Length: 234
Image 1 (cartoon, rainbow, N blue to C red):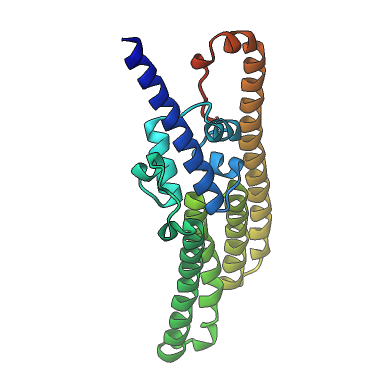
Image 2 (image 1 turned 135 degrees about the vertical axis):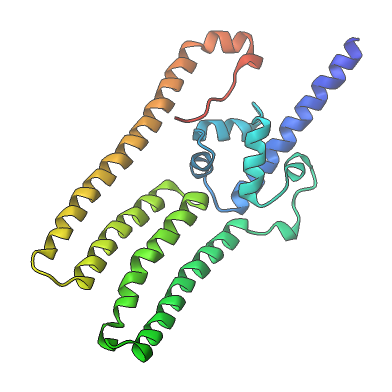
């Protein structure tokens, strides 16, 4: 009985070491910091560091999410044979997809511009196609950065959407008093800044609170390290 228990314990340690090595390897391959990876799965950087040290294991759902971010399968996360050339730079691929999507917006805007020039009674306003393309580009960028990129970049894209919409409305409807649209944009920008600060303050407060709890429970953790578990970031 004790022999089987020893085998199970050694297998558990082997899995921890393998997963720890794979997380660190794929994270570096994707050019992500521990904090950037943690933001993408709504955990703290402390949890990612813990997994990479082999002091704990992410649960199955988190392991699947990590595999998706790295562009590999969950089996690859559990395999010791992970350093393969065909797993190269999934983050680079995502950056390329993002750039291609943004370029497609401008290609469509160019086509619309030529169609307006050729087939409408007001070809002199065809240039508005490019102005409208700016907020559309930011909408596409918000979607893709929310999926694959750090939170500060999402914040910049949302801000860009607000001001580009204000510009498009102002130029598309040149009527008296339309400059007030920039006042509305400024108010929205303030709200976006406050939202960003609130979200990040909540995240930092949550991490700080967990650090205090961990410090208070250090004697217990030293007595029974197996009970320690990572918490998702708020």
